[in-house]
Amino acid sequence: MGRFSPRSLLLGLAAPLGALAFAVLVCAVILGVTGHSPLDTVDAMVSAAQRPRTFVNSLNSATTYYLAAVAVAIGFKMKLFNIGVDGQYRLAAMLSAALAGATFMEGLPSFLRVAMTVVAAMLVGAGWAGVAALLKVTRGVSEVISTIMLNAIATYLVSYLLNPARLAEDRPGSNNVGTRPIDGGGQVAGLEIPGSSSQLFGLVFLAALVGFGYWFVLARTRFGFELKATGLSESAAVASGVSVKKMVLVSMLLSGAVAGLVGMPQLLGSSYSYSLDFPPGIGFIGIAVALLGRNHPVGMALAALLWGFLDNSSNSLDVAGVPREIVGIMQGVIVLSVVVAYELVRRYRVRAEQRDVGTALGRTKTAEEASA
Image 1 (cartoon, one colour):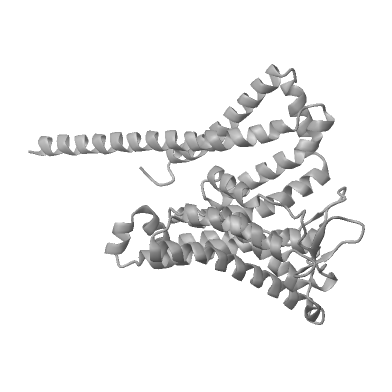
Image 2: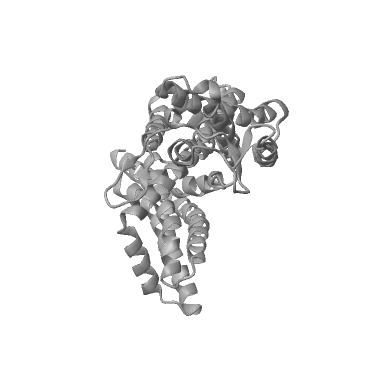
């Protein structure tokens, strides 16, 4: 069968669409059992989607979710489970925020300041992921265990550094503390959207560039081929002269570097400081988005948009008298059902290919007998 045959396309769409439909059905049942109208819920979400502010906020959320998903997907291509994206991005955001707000940065050109902040975040993210990579290639420590522990260490390290005696400063009249605010020269201007009081993150284009780079490296470079080949079969990769340890190390470093970018749109486009209320948990959302998007750059973009919209429509559900927790239920059901759906589709594809091979062999044998 051809790679882009109609059947392959249908099978590729079956899992995410089926998972989404199943999640909607489950949520409808839950709403009905709890005495809420599914139609009212849909109406509230459709109304929210038509508001420019919800649209902008959904895109902003999707920008960070997409970066987190790409970071996770790089590991997935190598059959590595980088659960440490959350710790990598938070540590990178905090340290790069401290750098961007430092006094010596104020005299530098704006472009240079932003570039230094972004590069610093990538280096911190890569360095933190590199710890797990070194443990795996030198001691065989599972990246799942090491990244979970590194997440906890990153949390305590950020808490330690986010102190007025170290890298933070007090906020008068507030219990919140944060790094020194980044002035206008270190910020990235947002894009004005008519009818919305919120601005679209200027670094949305950085996310698009990262997505393009992810596709290009995997689809058009030797390194990308070796990365996918190693993920599919380490023994085959070794037989082809590929160093598995090198690929593990490089892929984890790349994953960490992209993870370091996750906090940049929010930091440079809205918060302008890393504080106690900086968004947590984005790294774990990235895992869900990568699974839903099947590690494909376009699929992950659509999944990130869906996740961003669901998050930003929850307030509208509250106004309509529908529990906003239904959004969390829907997201959880989507993740569980999409994993099951992908496995079912994979098994069906394997059986279909086996039937095709059997049919082709049968035709060949019949032709040979006829010619004999």
